[in-house]
Amino acid sequence: MDFVFAIILCLAFAWISIQAFHSFAGRKAIPGKLLPPGPKPFPLIGNLFELGDKPHVSLTKLSQRYGPIISLQLGQVTTVVVSSSTLAKQILRTHDQVFCNRTVPDCVHACNHSYYSLPFLPVSPKWRNLRKICNSHLFSAKILDANKANRRVKVQHLIDDVYESMRAGRAVEIGKAAFATTLNLLSRTIFSVDLADPSSETARKFKENVRGTMEDVGKPNMVDFFPLLRKLDPQGIRRRVTKLNISKGWNQEKGTSMSQDLFTVGTETTSATTEWAMAELLRNPEIMSKAKVELGQMIGKEKLVEEFDIARLPYLQAIIKETFRLHPVAPFLIPRKVESDVEIGGYIVPKGTQVLVNAWAIGRDPDTWDNLDLFKPERFIGSGNEIDIMGRNFELIPFGGGRRICPRLPLAMRMLYLMWGSLINCFDWKLEDGVVPQTMNMEEKFGLTLQIAHPLRAQPKKS
Image (cartoon, rainbow, N blue to C red; front, side, top):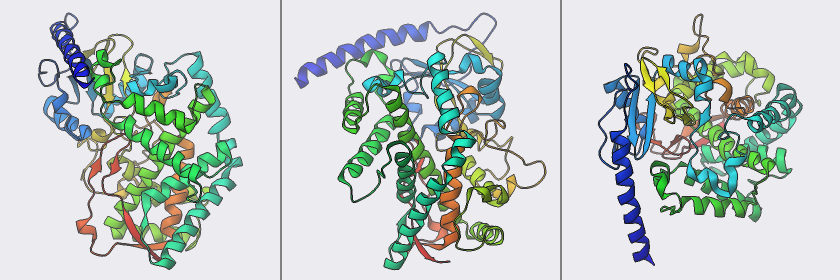
């Protein structure tokens, strides 16, 4: 059986090589216009080797060489990458209608999830209906205000768990704790049960399945670069995601699919940002001290941050913005697909091209920011620094922009401030023995979300 599979795979690659040759040979610019520049592709594989294990970093380096808009051939997929706020604005606002649809990864088709997945559906009446459900019934200010007591209870549970760890002398794994809190909030809202309850076997398996789905979705998939391999699914990613979806009980109904998007995206993005923000404060004790001073003055020490407090905490808001600048959890946002030939930055982006907006590079653009690698919340304080994250300022776009801006943004921001703000106001924190700020490992791990490669563990102390 393995031998037969190998023969089929070889034949498939032979066919792909012929198609790839024709695609390379057929890539011609519209008369008088040029395609964006980029490295010369190799036969068959194109520029796949240019990506490496940290594509956001590799593509940023390529943009420094070729310019803020580049073109690549990733297998059979023509891809354009933009790495400046000016070009991001053209894509997300000026030409939003042309760039509003998505490139859909193969694994998203598992269990027909793509037919009801809000992030990947094309703009259509179905998409508008689901978006309306999100805006009116899930994430409107009125609905969120009505549910704020539920969020407060979940944050209090988080603080209680940290108190138990403090009494026992145990360190807290920040990302894991934030993940559990976010997952419980969402599951309590949708299913009226806490899915992160360690005493529940069903909850434990559900959490493992959610994490497994996110890991598989984040893996590079040969099928996405060579669509002719779709039926073979050589890495088994679609098969594993299908199995995980069935074991979680997801089906093809649109309400279950929307819940899956909430769990897989909402939990990872909020918990990852919480972990990055805490890591930066532990790495920069003077910034931690300033944050605690603001919290003490505005709401009092050892108190939970309430939602009405957020507007009175400008330094905490600046810290979160700086965290998003340096550590956007979705470094390429969600890939877009061009509906028709369009001119961007003086170049032609052909119809059908996959487009990546490199938010990670935009956050490190020397034309916008000074001291690029320095964690400096003060850059967002004061007159003339009113950059927000709502998709209006394209220098900082962790949630995207235009009509496809993430609908979960209002809930994500509330949860982020409540969890992270309460953690630093209710406790003092120190790194585990042997770790000092100067030696903290801040290495990134690329996947569905950009996470810290080595989970952050810190010891809570009485504030």
